[in-house]
Image (cartoon, rainbow, N blue to C red; front, side, top):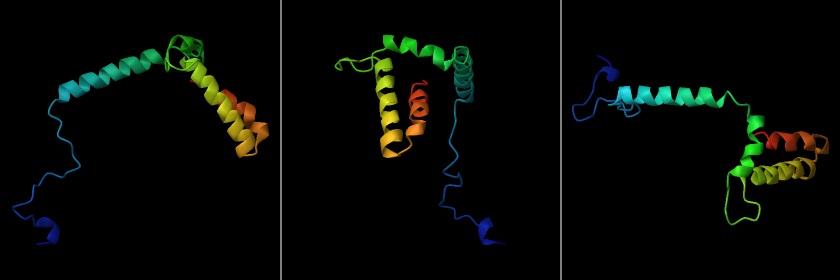
Length: 102
């Protein structure tokens, strides 16, 4: 008999890292829903969604408050970080374009 084969009676034999999933059909249904929305989202390219970001409010108290405005602010910030902080001005355009990809 080895130490691995002996289990004290007062210890729960269920490993703590295995989740208890009582509703497997419910989980399967949620996974099917997720696949449906994933497939539906992939029908439209991300670049084609960029203009629509003007219609979605990021924060109503900001003067430029749409998600498109936020994306443009992040793009300018990415450009400055690459050019000024990292000292790679030749890659600044690429960083700005990459930041604008939703």
